Image 1 (cartoon, rainbow, N blue to C red):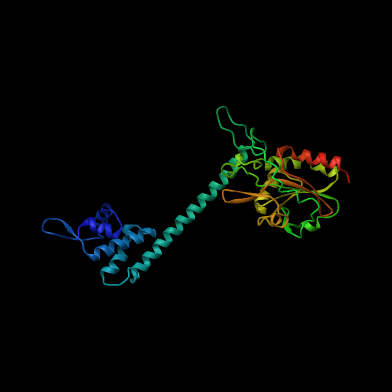
Image 2: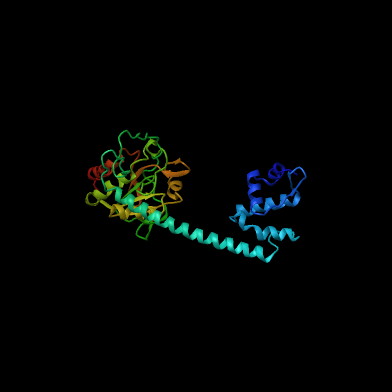
Length: 317
């Protein structure tokens, strides 16, 4: 057969076939007119070169395997030399993987350092500033009241144990006497991680970090106004939330509800974006483990702690 037919049947280019010939891996016979003539054995050799290449074995490293076929064996790896070829390829891949893992670790560390340094450093003239999650851009769309929280006042908190950022577990049905402020939010940003695409265009999505800073700054005032405790809650895992509590120096704990169990139990409103199902922003005032008051919808989130403080002051125990 001609070179074009061989290339088509083996799934390679004619240029690749010529390269294999230059390495001495293929040795077609020459016809009287000078054309190369390939047979079924050449097709099999070329297919094996291609298959081994997809496993990471370069063409020049396939010779022990091809020799095995040429000797009459049924499989390319029936010979000891082929097994040695596998071992060499595995060793090479392992070294490359180790090198890539080490480079990745350095890149992750440098990204983390640069991102957290950048959030405190002002941008130079003409330079786009680092994303600042503690302040809100102008023109954010406000969420509408869809009535999704009207059923909540008067409901008792369910028996649901959630991990907190201090390593403890908090049972929502046993928060204790007095009032608990539980603010629930979609997703906090972090300097080394991009927010979901189109985040700012989702009504009520942007502002979780700014909202959290508000509860941090007013924490003492909230306690003085009658709140026995304050918690934040989202569907992010505890490690993700712990980075936030350390970076923002929060005086209260964050609760992780990865499975959104509270949403199912109390029928809390959620939304979905880019494959993520997240809580809509709302705050529960819980008195003696019963929901006393609900803030929903919440806007703007960076002023919400003031709203909660004002309500507590106007509604003393």
